[in-house]
Amino acid sequence: MGLGRMWRQVRGDQRPHNLLAISDLHLGCDLKPGGRAPRSSSFDSQLAEFLDFHAVNLRGGKPWRLLLNGDIVDFVAITVTPGPEATFEVSDDERQFGLAAEEAKCVWKLRKTFERHPLVFDALCRFLQKGNFLHIIRGNHDAEFHWPAVQAALKAHLADRAGLEGFARRRFERRIEFHPWFYLEPGFFYAEHGNAHDHYSLQSDFFDEAGVHSKRELDLPLSSKVLRYFANKYTEQTDLDECDTWGVGEYIDWVLKAGNPLRVVADYFVMVFRVTYPILVQWLKVWRRFARAADHAIEKVDDGQVAHVRKLLGRVQGNEAEVKKLLEIVSRPAEQSLFDSMQLFYLDRMLLALFCLFGSWGAIASAHGAFGKIAAAVGGGIVFAALNAVLGRRRRTDAHPMLQQAALRIVQLLDVRYVVMGHSHRPVAEQVGRGRYLNLGSWLNPREGFPHVVVADGVAELRYWQQGGAVKRDIEAAPAQQPATQPGLAVQM
Image 1 (cartoon, rainbow, N blue to C red):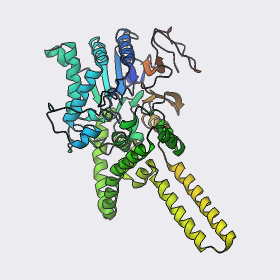
Image 2 (cartoon, one colour; image 1 turned 120 degrees about the vertical axis):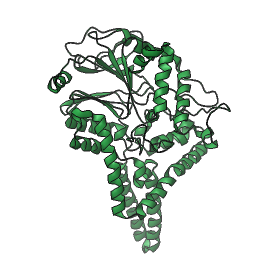
Image 3 (cartoon, rainbow, N blue to C red; image 1 turned 30 degrees about the vertical axis):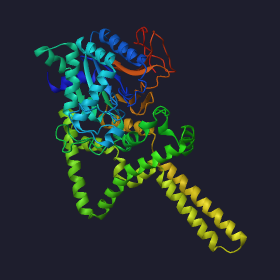
Image 4 (cartoon, rainbow, N blue to C red; image 1 turned 45 degrees about the vertical axis):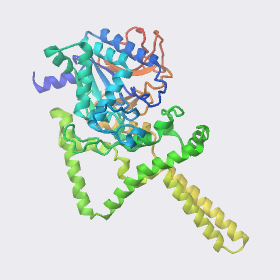
């Protein structure tokens, strides 16, 4: 088959498979020390039911490619640690905050997740045994799938559950693929988790090629460091789906309701010091370098990233201009900017408040007469309010608009019909330019059902899985070719 015919087949509706995508399962997020209550078993049973249903219910006789679109295993939230039986050293810091993101330690976390969610992994095994395929895309909570040993452990565990050996085992494992950043069907479909467009959730080594990592431990993005050193202690009191959009008032209200405000504040500032001190030190080092040397180092990093992304895009799509444009879409990790790091923790507002306070005191002290002192105080308040508003507009912690903008640029750059992401925990189905952007939401807090995307007959639809055959309709009507509602499915959103 020539390249032209292959391209027409990909662009058309003759793909030999259908797509099924889910995101943000956060398996293992309840693996905490101290015997805390595990996540409700109904989550596992509904997810297993979802997988079993699709394993045997094909569309047009085509197998499914199940895309696990990031944050499937929550390595960051797993804080249990092994006892004396551990084959690696566990530091006191790790006993308190969870194991570091080293390869062997990530394998141990994955095995604990297998033990916590046997129903889910049994269902994945059955799904694959029916001839379907599994594609795993890394997110910010499971960037640890970067490690080859972690990928191998998942494949081996599923093959073991299937009881396979020899050629049958190798064929089974070949149905499982890992994608370090995105999944692409040229001209039609693009999927990624979305953290590459959120500067607080993108680690500095996210684009490093698997197997050539020079460090023993993965870097964590700022958001994961906040989880590791602070939020993991308070997950029972925090709805993580909401806090990205909080302002100062919401944070203060949460602190007052947390039970021990002084402890929360102390833990918060200890975390801030842990996270920002290395950034400050690194910033000072960079500031001392000559600009020419810094530019040369940046060019070398970019060249390596371009080569890696070119390999991901493949021969059909991957020319030099597209690769560089795709890299331009991604965010810069926030830890590379002292100002961005300060904004996450409201340190910029605190410094502004101190500056305006002392400035106002100085102005009031030097002013003559009551009118002058009042004018100085009012002027200080106006300056603070204006600068605070400017800083507030520059603070970007809500991933939703970032992903919308990225989806539009991806449609324009790669000429795809559909862009699918997760990360923001907000289900979305909307038009972006000539394409359509769908966000998979999260399975953590299924208020209306468990969101997922089905791609069949050349059409991508956002649906909700609901136990017992419940159906949810949204304002947008289903397309004409939509079949009758099946048990447990919701029509297009």
